[in-house]
Length: 329
Length: 162
Image 1 (cartoon, each protein chain N blue to C red):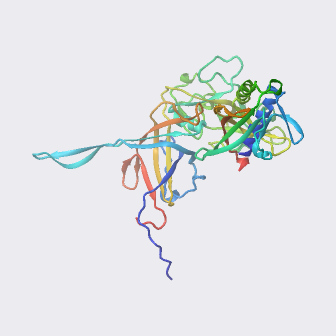
Image 2 (image 1 turned 30 degrees about the vertical axis):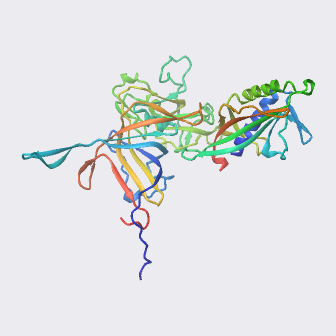
């Protein structure tokens, strides 16, 4: 048996149209990034990234910079470079998110990103939101897209509202937040022993698609919760928006994957296992037709290292190329 | 995009009926607010006087957003010969009145997108919005004065529209 013979084409320059971004949480407590394996998943459908990667859509003004420094060993007279050595390994990446959401805003903000919990009556005014209305308990039977509640609690929510679903803050220190390390608590006093603090910074948020107060009371969600099936002890509070701040001591850290699809079927992937925000929140506008402007979220990150177990090298970024069909390599 | 076009037209028609109830026209034996969509009516040899005619021309789309953002160019044409009572000598004033009405009709520069293909019409999930008008110079033709106000209407394509 023999196969048909291909007609090989010479290697061609990739022609890309746009860049798509995917992010996945880093387990900060365990210092464990999410690794992307291009040999296994490199040809994934752009609309359905492998878990736990989250599709952030098309981004713009994508720029990668290598800031690694090289030195040389010079000997002899006249001095002649005999060897090169890597003095530092450093890289950064910057781009703009086109759409605003909890996730894009948080990743672009650089520091803690907070949910504006619907305030309780008479609360003291505060820039990142005042004391929220009391949370309600989960009932049994919740899923990633359904929050089971008592009928008497469900009635206080409405279709279209936003909710945060997470545990009470119970005095712990360290990273907090379900699914994503959303903040680092240095002491209970620093967060005023606020039982709502975890829900205030949590990424476990969603929009409510519909509310049921009948046989199976609860909230059907228009999007799945990042943490999946809610854990016992989680509670629910309504949210009216989001806020970030210039300042704070926390750095967002995420694993990132950027994909450029070439016009001949080839694919270029940039995988940064650990990206930490390296700038505060800022925006950039793009004119539609004056005075209308589209407002994009500026984001810039420094790449932090991981060890490649294939050879023990310390690296900050992986660039993969999956050639188009029948091109010579 | 048809929902965006329909919404823009009905929004302006509703606003006109409130702003100037006297500006009406008779079209196909029906008296209605003096605004119509040119491509939804029989071709006319000359533009109707003292009414606003909406014509859709340019179209561009931004595909790189989570939802496609369509930009539709709408030309609002209008002409007047003044009033018979004044022998047409008030045509400049009449055109100025229509200019001002265009400005008032377009503000606020957004509206809830509606689906008028069903009865009753149903609100959709997004708003349409548009630019401020860009007025052409006055075009005099014999006893008529006319002008075109160009507006770009923006609309996100919703999943239900695909």
